[in-house]
Structure formats: structure tokens, C-alpha cells
Length: 557
Image (cartoon, rainbow, N blue to C red; front, side, top):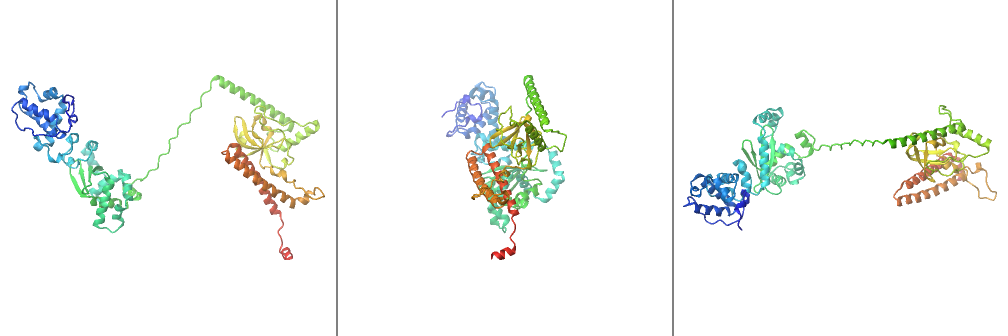
């Protein structure tokens, strides 16, 4: 495979695999022989970049180009091979850095296996740093090393000296060795690796069991496996007042080298030494130890979600506002007319604290008696959903009620009673100007004009209607109520409780099958309340039963 050298703009374009034959070295007899050698190297394998740099240096430092007509090596390389001036300089720099004695066609043995791309990236690194870069590292990893070094170079020596003079730094130097400080800062910034240490049994055995050299070496190997699971790697830790350290983890021999990139000074040690340093700083390697050493919370609580401002209501246009005003005026007038009529019928006075709906009923009964005419049940003209009028419950007066003045008087769960019909309604919510209720007949809306026809029921008379239902089965017909109050009353109530329980069970199963719709839930709640009232009544009967005396017990025996 032949590379088109006219298209080779960078050194990386020249990495094509070839076998390298013997090439004449030293002097060249003429330009033709020299150019033939260079043509071959351009087409040779990736290791030939050192010889390319050497040949370009020969063109730069000798008069070999004299008969070619080119005035410089840059002009020659551009015209003949399409190599820019920067690429020529890069090839020459590679030869300077990586060839034997810095001016040779041979690559130093320690740099074999890196490849031209990695060696180009390492050109600006110090020899001390390059020594710790394994050929197995990728080009991207080498670029990250250069980035870390460049970041540390932005910190001036004066800033480092000021860090060293800080009281906290001075105290830290007394408490820990330099290696321990390196691991302290590393695990301060790498909590996930710190968590892995605390979970590793082999690593923690060196802390929890009696120390032995063998146990420490195993713990050190476990530390290396956690830090470098995929092979040799480079980690970073910046120590205040000292600088940034490159931690080179070598997995083959379980060694770790700490290189100060400001001074290129190195500390070489084993993985077991690193394990001892980590346990010396963090002990049990749990969250509590980390917080004591680092002086902050190990797991910070998640920030509360930011509350988004509620969208502002859209402004209504003039036509909409006029329609709303007209509706409000009509509702207000209707409400006022109903209130006026109710006042005339019942003598209701909002300022009279002694007035009650019962007094209003008494006034209405008088009016009905005089006119011998029963007023039809009031219905909502707007909604048309109120149930048909029913006969008023005669026991309604026995229960406490209070006047309904508006939707703000009630909340879901309350009960309303129709003053005329005795109809019971469960409040389930409200809508514009109306109280939304559920009854045995379905959902109804009690609007502003009908407020005066309803009262808030503080005790549900639903089950009290059945207190006189007990009847006799003997030949004499109906017995006296007082005689049935105990035995037959309890028997009838017990049967109603039994029936109501079965009814509730069936309604609950239907509601469950329907996915608990609103109507189903309201039916379940209504029946549950009715069953509760019956049970309370049964408890009342039980409390009234006379206790058997000891004499009676003796007689029975």
C-alpha cells in the first residue's frame, strides 16, 4: 500500500505499516540518492518518523539541497511532499527528543511501541513525567495529563507559598506525611472510589485483623485493583502548599509513583505502602471517618426543586369581561329576590342571632295552613338537577342545623338538608357560585338563590327515620310502641344493620370493578355513614339494658 505524499498534511497522515530495509546512513553521494532515501522513509512504517526527522535535519544543516534549486528545507518539503513548515518542525523536534544522542536515525529503545501520535503528544512533557507514561495509555489519556499539568502551571509560586503558610496547612503537615496528604486530598475528591474501598473485604482486612506483611500486600493489591481495574493508569491529587501530584499506578509490579509536576521530584512506593497510608488517614474508610478528616458532610442533601412561578391568568378581553359582569349582575339580582321572598315567608333576619331555620319553618307552616296550599319544592332554574320534592321528614326538627349562607360555609364531607323536603345531600365540592352535592338521586348543584332553601346538617337523621318501624307478627295486629321499644326495636335494628352491611359490600364491589369512580366512592361513603349511625344506635341500646344482679343469677341457677 502506497501513501500519496502530496496529500500528507500532518505527521499522523504518514503512519502506514511497512517493512524497513537497510537504508544508507551518514553522507549521500548526490541529491538523487538523498531524495530516494527520503521517498522510501515517507512511505515506510510508523517507526520511520525518527529517520524522516533526521533526513530533514540533514537538509537543514548541510548543502545537500544546493543542486536542487531549493533555498530551504521548508521550501523543499512543501514543494516535493506537501509538508507544511509546522510539520517539518515537528519531525525535526521528534528526532531531537527521541533519537539516540538527539541526532540519529535510530529511535531510543525506551520509546519503541508508542507510535508517532503519542510521541507527538509527549513532546512538551518532562522526562520525569514521560518515564511514568506506559505505552498502553491512549492518546486521549496523554492529552489529559497535559491538561492537568497546564492547569497547575496557572498557579504561581507565590500562591503556593501562601497556601503553605495557612494555619490549616501547617497543622496538616504535623498530622500527616506527604504520602498521606496526597491520599487524603485524592479521596476527598473521589468519593465513589472511597466507597469501594470500604466495601472491599481484602482491603479492609488489613484494618480489622491483626496486621501482617502478607495481609498488607493483599490489601495493597486490592487497592490497585480498585484504582486501576483496566491496567496502568494515572491519577491526580493536589496538596495545598505543595502542588499537584501525578499518581502513576503500575499494575504489573503493584508499585505506585508520586510525581510533583512543579518540581519533577518523585516518591516511589509499593501498593502496600499506599494501603498503610490510606488506613492511617481514613481508618475504617466509612462516611463518619471521611467527615472527621475532610470536615464536611459526606453525602450532601439534594437541593430542593426550584419552585416555578405560577402562570399569571390571561387578561380577558372587553367582550368577555362584559359578559362576566352581566352574569354576575343577573345572579346577584336573583339571589336578592330569593332572599327577600324568604324573609317575607319566614321572618328571617340575618342580624338576629336567635333566629333558626326551625322558626322559619314554623312561619311557613302557618302560611301554608292559611292558604291550604302546599308550595312546590324549590328547584334550581339554572341547573335543573335537583331531585323531585319529597315529603318533609317530621323528625327533622329534632336535629341541630345551621343556616347556609354561601359556599364558604361548607367543605367536602359536610351534609346539607333541604328545609322543605328533608332531602339529605353530601357536599363533595364547589363550582362557580354553587355547592356541589351528592344525593341518592345523583349529583345536584345548590346555587346562590337556593342557599336559603338549605341548611347545614350537624347530625344526620337518615337512620332515625327507622326507629318506629318495628311491628308485631301476632294475631292482635300492631302492638304499643313503648312495649316494642326494647325487644322488637333492637331486633329490627339488628336486621337493618345486617342488610346494610350486605348492601355496602355489594356497592363496594361494584365501585371497585368500576375503578372507584366519583359516584361509586360517594355511594360507599354514604352507606358507610349510615351503617355507622346504626351501630352507634345499637351501642346506645346496649348501654340502656339493665345489668343482671347476683340474686337473679342465683335464682337462675
